[in-house]
Image 1 (tube, rainbow, N blue to C red):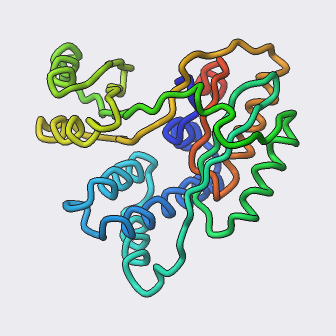
Image 2 (image 1 turned 135 degrees about the horizontal axis):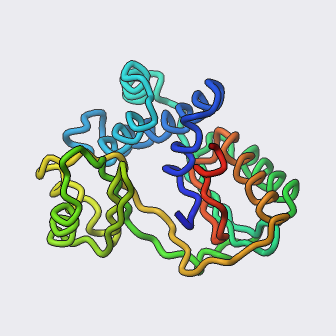
Length: 248
């Protein structure tokens, strides 16, 4: 993916240490809390919560952790409010970067984000300084099961209103307009497909090539953002080597 999404983060972290995995669970726990506060604790009546639960399971988050997070958010312990804050700036080489956070302390998060930009050869910018370089798109990741016919799944997605379709050996990727996300997701679910992710992401309208030195700095920056509990999503417009290839 051209944008460094939360899904890419989860996939990249799955093979790392237990500490890194716990960090992913912390981030998802915050999303669960926000979803419960927004639409209630019943996933059958809360599509946003249903999507976060699917994401949690795809990240191998234990069911008891998911249940505990939902109960905590809907009970007396759910009095911690997380504010969604978005930061924009430039990474090394002028790479455009957007950082989405959920935080219970705006001052702490702003200072941390600024520090990471500075530490990795970048700079925190002003609101809307790079957001115009990204388009918001609904992204649905579908589990590819044995016997699935790619063309049939593609035609189903397009008939439901999808704009684009792609695939790997293990997943199908469906791109939709943000307003069509719920409709297409529900249509795929009704057709028996397992949804691993359904969310609105920021996709760069174009990407930039960077040299090896910049790649190192950008990846270091992404790792530092991954390690920050407040950071949920990081998007950028740099062409980087495949993350999975690097882990082999």
